[in-house]
Image 1 (cartoon, helix red, strand yellow):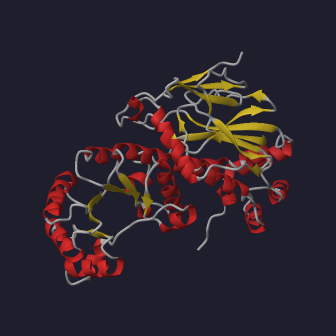
Image 2 (image 1 turned 60 degrees about the horizontal axis):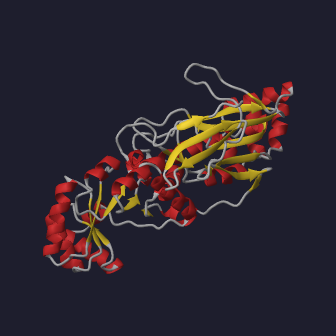
Image 3 (image 1 turned 180 degrees about the vertical axis):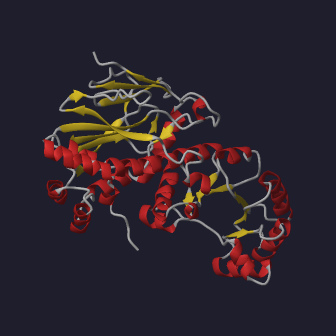
Amino acid sequence: MHTLRPALLTDHYELTMVSAALRDGTAHRHCVFEVFSRRLPAGRRYGVVAGTARLMELIREFRFDPAEIDFLRRTGVVDEPAAAWLADYRFTGDIDGYAEGELFFPGSPILTVSGTFAECVVLETVVLSVLNHDCAVAAAAARMVTAARGRALIEMGSRRAHEEAAVAAARAAYLAGFQFTSNLAAGQRYGIPTAGTAAHAFTLLHDDERTAFASQVATLGSQTTLLVDTYDISQGIRNAIEVAGPELRAVRIDSGDLAVIAQQSRELLDSLGATETKIIVSGDLDEYAIAALAAEPVDMYGAGTSVVTGSGAPTAGLVYKLVEVEGRPVVKRSEQKATIGGRKVAVRRHKPTGTATEEIIVPQGVPDRHPNDRLLQRSYLTGGEAVALPTLDESRDHLRQCLISIPWEGLKLSAGDPAIPVTVVPTE
């Protein structure tokens, strides 16, 4: 099994540019690249920054080994000067950006990469690969957390994603407010609490449902969760309580009309004396399905496919664009893809009550600061060296505070304008 090294995430055309720039002498010009979105996915009112700390680890490990350079030389991707340059590659520039867990809007400069043209341009694909995926998952997950109204969520979408994307998705969902993941690699790598229960296969393995439940309870005790919808849900609940007793921690339901079944299941559990047994529902849940169950006696939601695929928006639509060369702003003028030149500084403006009202972005300058403004960019790498970063739990809390700060209209699941407006202040 081969794990893809970050250097080979580089796109062919990036190395074409490096080769040409090295040959014509422009490779070492000091440049600034920015990551931003031109628009939010349809129906979304905010984006969520996620994956930045994960990205910094990849950039620090970004090296081309001899076998990779030999492949690039042998296949004609790079010429000899470029191959020699890649052999010594280390990113020595600066990276600044929005904190993980920060909200972003169209035009927000969520990451700024500065250094020589060559050392920055080879990072484009790895930067966009990480951020487009993790930001998409985090935004979908944050909407599900809002829809759940304080009820717990477990991320269980590993089987609907690439094996490495599954781990990253679990991290992004936890950042967004999910309490658990079923992905054990994410639990080990990031310290995310894990949870899970047996599948239908375990019930089908045994001669009858009661025997399967008895085996699970004998192994894990009554503080486990029994999957009760393999055959008949009502009988499954009766069997579960008969085997585990009324102290059974939870039952999970994975099919059917969940609103109706949740009501019926709660009534049945209560009638059996299992008043403290929780009800967990799963089965193709997205933020809309979760919101529709808000009035039902559901204690926890399991989300899989929708969360790991961004719930209809599998990419955050982020781009990586050159905005400054040797201190001079540069712009792309293509119709509907124009950029704003110059390195940007951004602040979030708030009322004295803490409600966010506007995002102010200034190219090649510093915004006039108001008393309740919050500077959005922070340092990630300086001279190629890492700066201490918040923990995942701190970033998770930061997102929770950001969601509290936006006007309540911004949390609606319906389509509408971004939660707060973005104003680009022209440079005088």
